[in-house]
Length: 114
Length: 112
Image (cartoon, rainbow over the protein chains, first blue to last red):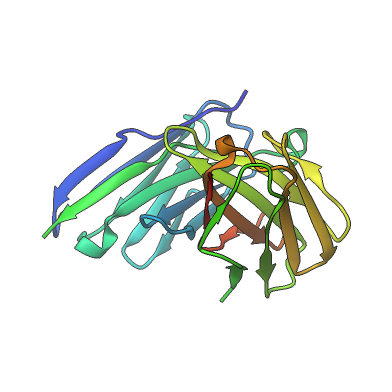
């Protein structure tokens, strides 16, 4: 059974630092991996989607990597800003055996201190 | 940009009422989803739909039903609301299996 883990559950860093959020999964048979952010009381915003054949995706100050063999993905945030404060979730998409559903991590709550 | 609109941001209903949560997407997406999100339990899939008139049970369908009469609209129905259905409800849509999932702003539902 696929399980997705995000460690740490919470992270607080000063503004301007580069940081890495971690996501691990137990079964390497995935279609893709997606990173989201969620602001308090709001829905989720899709940040990056990495296909299983890709190693990384970039959008602005965000870079997501994928290592299927080790069951790991990282989300790198460069030059962090207070506006980056949010909960970050990763999710992996399994194939036909799971009706193509996302398996979710519990999230990392990120606080960027001004 | 994809727009997923949930009809209410906050809703308060009474135990035993029939509750309708509406979701509309404007990108002609085939796939639509209903989740609930609770502290400590994360996101859990209630129902999803791959096409008009089609529906599939997710992980926690008990106490819920859905309706998809038109491609752009996916409704979640609480047949007889109970207090344990107090939660944040999130609707999402996506174009295809390998496409990103896009979410609405959520409906915070309280059942008294």
